[in-house]
Length: 343
Image (cartoon, rainbow, N blue to C red):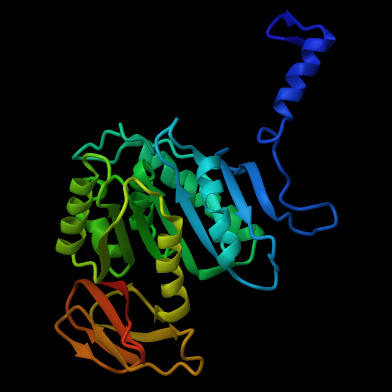
């Protein structure tokens, strides 16, 4: 056996092969030859396009006829944490609540990450591209509830969680920072504006490591000033605790009791005067017949209306932010938005 010009004797070659095939090192298959899904730990998957490694946990009760919530979770700084270990922290919660867990390897999940003021860190850009490719691969293999995707990160893993979640509000329902890092220059204001309808929850331990309380206060200021309507921050007892259970309960409360809403629009650009038809699509788990308390549109040109379906004409050129607010019968406020460009 040759490698790089070196000759290995058979015993040495066998030892090397055994090392690579040891538990935790082999690449697991996600589906058996008969087509059934492998449940439990599915480790060292490599996304086809980017080659990014990720680790999964599939509940042992997985049924492909049921749609499951998906948690994408960011690990902390190596060697204190890494992707497989981060996945393993979620196993009990995943089994208890029926969650699919996905833990990608993140370059930017490090407390030493430098965040430039005028551009995104290169590691964040790589992680965003790879993470979204991983999410596409996972959602193509498993039955995922498209209204129930959360991205979260513990410690330095909150860097990519905030960055990726804010760039993809069309995919993720919520962002959760778990005693996590934050920086005011993670994303520019135009990115924040397009995500301000999202659910965002950050929590930190009252006895956390030095610096984390300050970063979470910075996150509080940043999200509040930029108008995030469903932003929550909470100090908890304890220290630098990853607290998967707290994150899962927050996430599942939204999935199980808040309406998921979407703006349907027949066109998003055109010449003035431009007439568009807008419809509020509501999926409320607590109201199967679709009834809600109220629907309110702000059409971006000083026009407000409370009809579920709206036909509106924009008379002048401009970029209009359409913001939809739906209040369900339990008083939960959910938001969605889109943009109309008039030439």
